[in-house]
Length: 221
Ligand code: CA
Image (cartoon, rainbow, N blue to C red; front, top):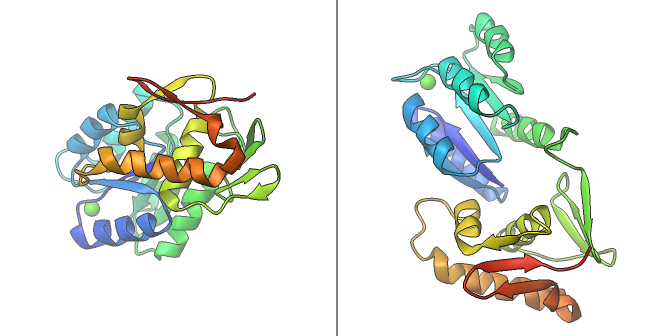
């Protein structure tokens, strides 16, 4: 899962980024409203954490622009403690939830999980492909009912292949989804992690099929 954190206070942005990365998300940050919109146009985010008071374009403006383009991208807004009006305006503008500043990382993390867990067309609670079952709420994948011991990256790769089951996923898509802008060795890393995923699938390694010159596809139904 890839999350964009839009926050102009570097300390808060760094704290949130570090915390979310520890939980296994891929995280990018943007410092102002305009770069946030540019990044959302460019990268396939699964959720946006959006501060309201931002330079260039404020959070509500950014949120309305997001909603004009995309009705389903989950957005959690960060509001000032006194910003009672912000909460109403934010929810009216299409925010999925809000967290009031100052907040604890734990609270934000719980809200993110809750929003990503919400049933709806964009997220299914459990998804089965052949012998594999993905539970996005607990971030666990089982093989014939036995949980796979995956690292965060391995989980992310297999999760993405399962979510895109039925299609071929290009290397570029996987790289964009799984690695943030700071990584420059990602291309090799993709091969290494994919090899590890196959190893852990054991006799089912062939479920992950290489599509030569394109990327990968998950077999099974
Ligand atoms: Ca701010």
